[in-house]
Length: 356
Image (cartoon, rainbow, N blue to C red; front, side):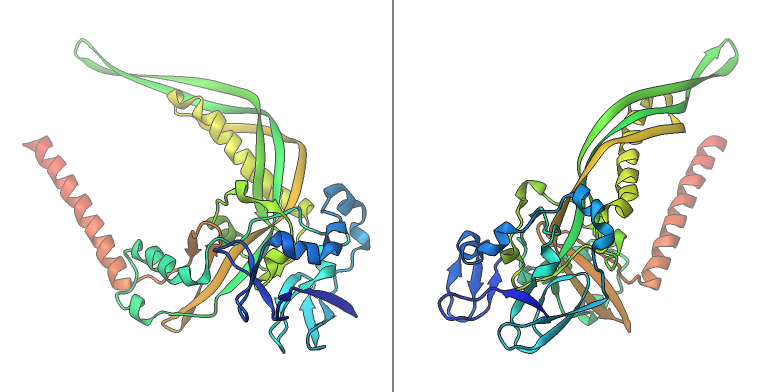
């Protein structure tokens, strides 16, 4: 049966948790606080684990077991912990200890880096209130009646892709000139075939590597500040949940490629703004893509309102909030008719000027 790593206070033996405010691990029982470096020294075996390497992973992909459930033993109480193949850190349901599932971050699968949590769970209500206040179509009683459910701090697995893109795009362009010649108002339209060639380099293009995480929700809480990445240490996971990737980099490369190509096309198009360009053909290729496996901090929570559940994600580093919100039918209708009335007023004013 597989074993786990538990981070315990050297002073009293109680569980340690990573604290976002201090960047250290803290014992909530005796109040002692320890640096990541000090805790790492007590768990030297982690230093021998091999970091993720794309080439090695692809060479051994068929040999990697991906069972739905594995059983681990809690070293504190001896209980058996069941976890699916993507879980890398959790809590023992019997004694509450924070446990790191060693096999999920070893054998060549150790992440290359991690961004530690900076936002604390206590800050979430204020962040949500700011998020709500920007939404004008929320029901009037939403603030009073919505109930925030259990908050989960999760280290979500991400692939960070680096690559160059090389190739060309062609665009249709047009320049329209209006002028007066004698008694005539003239319009001259010139059409152009525009060609742009070149290459661009991209760094740290993020794609979440978890099947269970909605892609649009993870995309919406970007960006992360990658300058704050530090070498992976499982002590950062203490007190949080963590998932191991369950979608490999080859499967997610097309998403990263799409993001890079969209950015490249946008850049090429911007060089021809004078011609009001529209894309005609696109021939862009990835050159020497590489990838890093990182863990990024995310808070997940649900809110209950009107018999429905609304899911939110919060960037655990920056505090950016994303998620679905209810819409007031009354406010929506008022807004629509207000816009329609405004448009009608503008149209009436124009007609009045034309026929005055």
